[in-house]
Structure formats: structure tokens, C-alpha cells
Image (cartoon, rainbow, N blue to C red):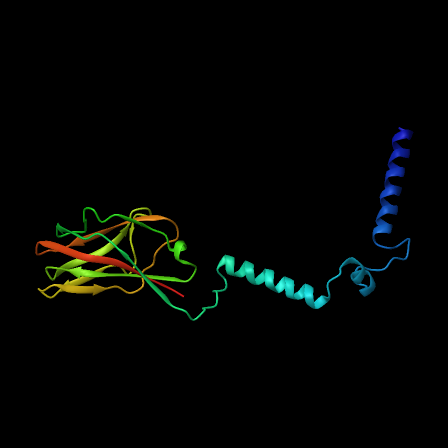
Length: 189
């Protein structure tokens, strides 16, 4: 029992002494906030270290989407031709042969995507459907009711990130809908 007591006293003494040393209670040591200690541990000036930290924070904020990258002022438009076709249905139906893959990351970080084309018979509605995420693409639905061949143009659509598969759907309560020359318009800044 006495050996355990001696061991306990020795351990408490060692921890106490080491704790005092860490906090500078036994030996007079400079604090880490002391400018001489700080200058000895780094070769950069305070301004250089602050600039470095600001740069890292900005990079992290951009990567997490908290800050939008600055626009270069250069706008670039590109078009991706899609396949057209026809369908005869009063409810949303896949137009055969219109499947395609698309990933906005291939075009940069600031991308707007819209689509356009022709409805040859002048009646009906069209939209783009996201097969990967099982949803109609927001802002892709367009309708024409003119009776003559008419063009359509969408607003910028909400394309989800990633390499997704899409197809074009159509409907016309009056019969067949024929879509020709559909294409994606990709605007990068």
C-alpha cells in the first residue's frame, strides 16, 4: 500500500511541476504574444500573414458557394444541338431519340443554360426532363398555340450539378406535336 502511495505522490508532483512549467510559473519565460517570440517563430511580417489568411478564407468561401466569383466581363455563348422528333399524346410523353447528357461543370463556374427550338405544327407544349434526378427541369416548359410553325425560347433553367441524363417531353391535347431544331444555349461569364 505504501509503494502505491509513494507512486501517487511522485506522479502528482511531476504533473504539478510540468504544469507550472507550461504556464511559466517556475521559470520566467516570454509569453507567445511577446513580439520577440513571434518574430523568432516566423519570417513573415504580420501584414503578409494576414494577406495569406484572407486569401485562404476567400478561396474557402468560393469553394463553398458563399462568395460568387467576379465576372470577367466576357460573355461567351455556345449552342448544343439536340435531336427533335414527334409524339401524339395529351399527357407528358418522352419524344423518342431525344436523350442527351449534360454537365454544367464542363463550361465553367458561372453558367446559364436555356433552350430553344421550333414547334412545327404550332400547337403543344414541350419541356426537358432530368432522367438522373427524376424531375422536370425548372423553367424548361414552354407552350405554343399559334397554328403555324413557331419558335420557342426558355428563360435560364435550373440545371442540377453533375453529369445528368435528360430527354425532351411533349404533349398536345389536339393531336401530334412536332419539335425541330432544339438546342441548348449556354452562356458563360
